[in-house]
Amino acid sequence: MMQKPSFTLGIEEEYLLVDLETMDLAIDPPPSLLSECRERCQRDEQVSRELLRSQIEVGTRKCHSAEEARQDLTQLRRVVVEVANEHGLAPIASSTHPFALWAEQKQTPRDRYINLAAQMQATARRMVICGMHVHVGIDDDELRIDLMSQMTYFLPHLLALSTSSPFWEGQDTGLKSYRLTIFDSLPRTGLPEHFTSYAEYQRHIDVLVNAGLIEDATMIWWDLRPSARYPTLETRIFDMCTHIDDAVCLAAITRCLLRTLYRLRLDNQSWRRYNWMLLNENRWRAMRYGIDEGLLDLAKGELVEFSRLLEEIIELIEEDAEAFDCTAEVQHAWSILERGTSAHQQMRAYEDALEKGRSADEAAREVVAWLIAQTADGI
Image 1 (tube, rainbow, N blue to C red):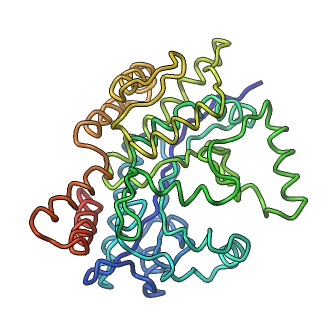
Image 2: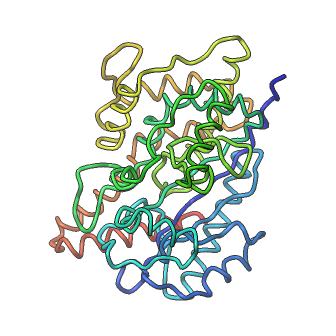
C-alpha cells in the first residue's frame, strides 16, 4: 500500500563569496570560515563546502511549514553574512558572478571534487555557478518516481521565476539564466528521464555504478531527481534566489504542486506527460526570456504570456496552499512578476550605472554591491 507523503520541506542554497574591496570572487577564503559558520549554526551539516573555494552551501533542517523554512534559511544566511564580513568578504545569492573569470578559481581539496574535476576536466572547472535545491518529503519510492514524471511539466515555470544569472565573465549574455548553459555541459543533467517504476530507475542507476561510471545516485544531476540521501524529491532547476522571500515562495509552490499531483493520483488521475522536445522548448525559453516572453501551453499548442500561466498554477494549487498555510508565500509570485526576478534587477542596476557614466567594469561592480545588499536584506 502506498505510503502517504510527509511533504516535509527543505531548502539548500549555494552562495558565491566576494571580496568587499574588489567585488571579485574570493578565490582563496580563510580555511576557518567554514568551521566558524558551523560553530554558530544549530548543526554542523547545515553549512558545507562546494566544488570551488569561492562557494559555500547551506541547507535548512527538515521543516514542516514554509514559515519554519524561512526562519531557518534566514538564520543560515545571517551566519554566513556575519562570518564572511569578519573576514572582509560577503556572500551573494546569485547563480553567476557578473565578471569573475572561471579560469582563476581554485578547487576545494576534497576527494569527490578532485575526482569530478579529473573526469570532467574543463566542464567541471567552469562550474562557477550556484543554484537552489528544494526537497519535499515523498516517502514512498514508487510515488517519488511517478510524481517526478508528472512534475517535469512545471520545471520551466519554476526556473522562469528564479532567474539570476544574466552575466558571465563581464558580458551581458542576453539570457536570464546563463547558469544552465554551463551546467548542461555535464552528463546526466537536464530534464529527468521517465521511468515506469522505482525498480526501473534503480536498474539504470545500477548499470552506471557497476560500470564504474558513477559512485552513486548523487552523481545524477537532473533538474528534478529522487534524492539519494533523503526520502525526498529534489527540485534542482532553480537559479539562486537573491531575495529570501522569493526562495520561500518557490519552495512553497513546489511543495503545493507535488501535493496537487498526489491528490490527482488518489482520484486515479495524473498530469499529462509531454514529449521531451516540447518540455525542452519551454526549458530553453525560461533560460532565454525568464518571465518575459511566455511559454508554450502544451495542451493548447500555443505561446501564452507568463502571467496567465502563473494564474493557472496558483488556481491549481489553491487548496494545497490553504492546507499548508502558505497562501501568502505562494501569492508572493505576483510580486516577482511585477518587479522582475533577480536577473531583471541586476540588469537594471547595470544599466543605471552606465547611464550615470560608469564604465562597464564599474557598472558590473555596482551589480555585485547590489547583490551583497539584497542577499543580506531582511536577515
